[in-house]
Figure 1 (tube, rainbow, N blue to C red):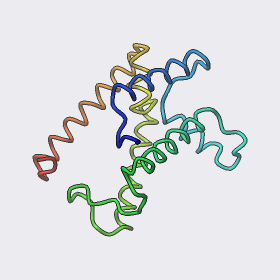
Figure 2: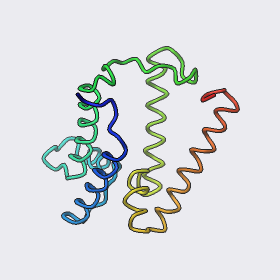
Figure 3: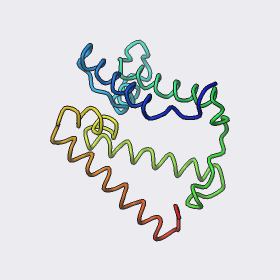
Figure 4: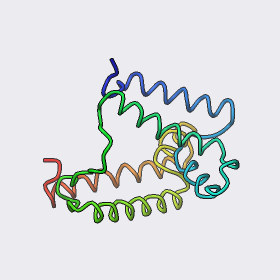
Length: 156
């Protein structure tokens, strides 16, 4: 039987071992942004894809496979309305979510990494830039969650 969600005491150490393995064997940090950058720069020449692109593929495909096998999700294009924040029309949802993804990607590129890269790899290396970036990510998330609850009643 496959669990709907891996327990934290299994997933956490596995991610930690992945980070240690990447640093010890290839001297590479763990993070998803590098995979996206690698894909964007080499999309037309797949033979030039690097380790980070394949790591990104593994993260996405592994997560999707686990979710399908555990029956935690059933693949569909239905996203839901996120507590009423998104419209119900699929094309409008797609446009909003695409724009949000582009803004997040731009922000991650400007920050020099993504939340996983700064929060796990950068923090473990005591990088001052990663400490500031991670504190900013968390402060923004707390502020936004509280604002959404206050304004839209989401989460209550």
